[in-house]
Length: 228
Ligand SMILES: *Cc1c(COP(=O)(O)O)cnc(C)c1O
Image 1 (cartoon, rainbow, N blue to C red):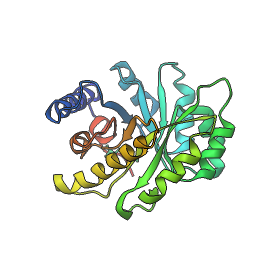
Image 2 (image 1 turned 135 degrees about the vertical axis):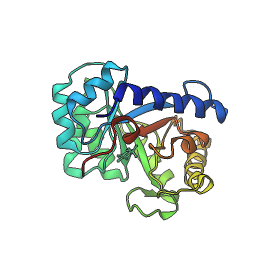
Image 3 (image 1 turned 45 degrees about the vertical axis):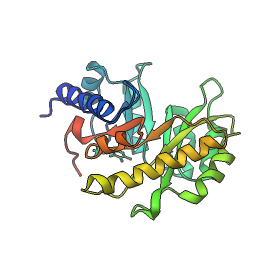
Image 4 (image 1 turned 30 degrees about the horizontal axis):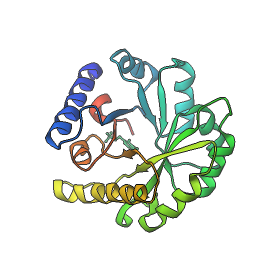
């Protein structure tokens, strides 16, 4: 049985240590606890330990948990691939969607965002250097997609998200994160005001923080390994 409260403390300590080591301002990296495959009771333990941001990959599973965890202070992030026919449920139930990779999806999310809710926060998923995962937008197409998304009234474009191919070497890991950061800087140089780099998981959060991550998505290091 995992000690979730202790794992959360350890993970937060890793984040703080990396902020210090790489000259990042204290508190500039937020922790998204990735709770996919873990039960609502498990999430409750994390909530009791002070965790508020949760990431889910599978819509049906996520909706069941959101339904039994109605606390207003929980912030739900969808971090799985977005299917066009699921956009309404995403827009109605989540605060963030991290994997937007085409305009059609963005437009539908915007149109289905209920008017009484704040705009849905989104990140564009980038496919840095044509990595093995086929999801994400090619680097050279990100600026165009961002320009199309910005005027959509139901969305707030916050930044970029990346899932690089796994690397064991720190310097190799670093390349994809650096390219993602530079890409966001280029977009901001054209007048955009993006503030979020969603990158870094249990095995590479330090590397991601070294290259500017503002939100790390951590599952295994908090909840233990997942049943497949
Ligand atoms: C599952 C998942 C994570 C968490 O990965 P861990 O290695 O368990 O920390 C992060 N991001 C995405 C997109 C995921 O699907």
